[in-house]
Image (cartoon, rainbow, N blue to C red; front, side):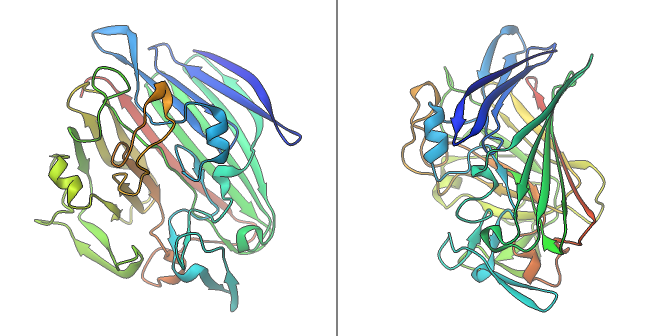
Length: 349
């Protein structure tokens, strides 16, 4: 297990670091403390452990990360996903949030947690894992949310090839919290097999999905997936036809059992690299990059484009604060918010 911590500069008076973890199997994750942006995830080929593929999209230069409106591979909060009409009521009081998707609020607002500089509290190394704790203090009414919220995010890489993200938060007032990670995966990599996300195989351990209106806001109902286009209970390949029909940006119900359990798998049919997701959250958003820009200043001078990345975002259901049927995202003052995401990386799918 090895790590590198390198100071690359400042944003204002705050130090910016690039931190890289490599385990004993030559799997690597690298990330910045700006928004917890994950710059690369390197997976070695099974038959050639010294050759790796970078299986996550990202910016060619750090400056692009600072100015881009995208959410590439970052910490999302205070509330991930959508809040209808950018408002909610809590304890009888109305809270108006920033509109950044039409009339609605998306991924924490104009300057969500993905654009904040997080403090690097600690880096811990032992025989079988490396971990880094990041911390951010979100002030009362930042982006319209009540309560001073102290947030901690821990990134861990272990010798089981698991990339683990743990979110913790506590507030001095009742508030709403729904933090998640927004990795844009492409397990074809950036080299010989580089292409959009066609030829990825998907499985989602879910019987139902949130019903959405035309603005991707949940109606409050869950609909069964069996024998519908939403059904990934049996493994299904992503085709160009599937993407041309609009792809997906939908939240799957993964059950009331909020212990850590397997929720999704995805891998490249070309490289045989992929990830299995585990979480303790009630839902997972599956997104196929339908709203990606036509061109990016991407890593290795790649331009990416629409449908070049796919995302699994474990979380509460979208707009849960306004949907009485959904599990509540309210965090009571003095209580602790905890969310866990385990991404088991592999090269032998």
